[in-house]
Amino acid sequence: MTAKKKLKTSAMIASIAAEGQPTTAAPFGHALVEAAASNDKIVGMSADLAKYTDLHIFGNEYPDRFYQMGMAEQLLMSAGAGMAREGFIPFVTTYSVFASRRAYDFIAMAIAEEKLNVKIVCALPGLTTGYGPSHQATEDVAIFRGMPNLTIIDPCDAIDIQQSVQAMVDYDGPVYMRLLRGKVPNVLDRFDDYRFEIGKAKRLIEGGDALIISSGLMTMRAVEAADELKEKGVAVTVVHCPTIKPLDEETILAEVRRHTGKPVFVAENHSVVGGLGESIASLLMRNDVQAQFQQIGLPDEFLDAGALPTLHDRYGISTQEVVKKVNSSLA
Image (cartoon, rainbow, N blue to C red; front, side, top):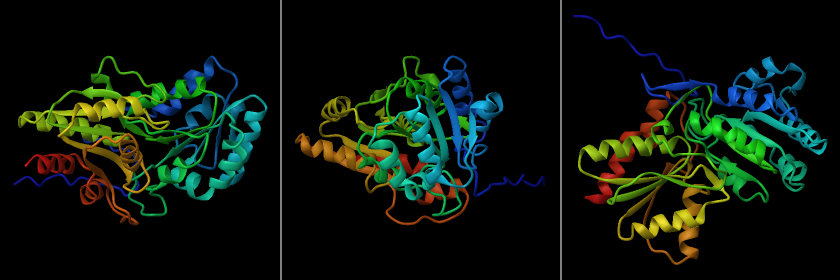
């Protein structure tokens, strides 16, 4: 008998691409280089994590416009604010946990209060690393949603990231983006009319049996689940909501009303506390819209360390777990 090849996994894998899935390498870094070619106001800044946020690509191309700030996230944010005051468009990068937990007050006082044009782009959002609570930013959206003037973006794939970079350059004001880095899956290329727009949700798939509203990597899971469910005769609508704040209230309310009497899921790579799910639940309540509302997200707890496929199954954000939850709601 031929022995099966053992697949190697790493707790630090930041790519969520399945084996054989088409990917794009470092879409953020390359998109920023492209944007900077026609805009000399763009600068890159990082807190010793340029290589792990794909900003090193920009640094290699534009060394005179790249600033390595060392392991000092508070300094990074304050320096970014200073660059914005001088008319530059700083893209500052670190990990989501360090921006949200360690540098919150500096972002609030130095950047958000003054509505400065700083773009905070952070890797390892939610459960995209197996290193455990020190690196898993499972509550970053909850932390930042309450900050005035801050736009929050949660792209789902390489196409979303590429398009969002130019959108951030064109947008005047502070932005926090949850970055998928490394080899990022291509998901939205099958939807010819898709275009990322700040503040806009987009229907990707139409189906009458259930509705999934999703952001980030969970849009990939929702699309995969919809494809699998379709083979079993279940038609699911998938609405991608890449901007968490400001929320596209008009589109979301219209989609939920179209699915009156059907299960409505909100899927996110974030704690069920304080993220997209609770934001939409609040929207529905304020507008007196009734729905069979369910959340698909991470539990309100510190998560384990381990390999990502195992953790995604354990915490309910794998494609198969999404399929199970939809099927259970229709049983």
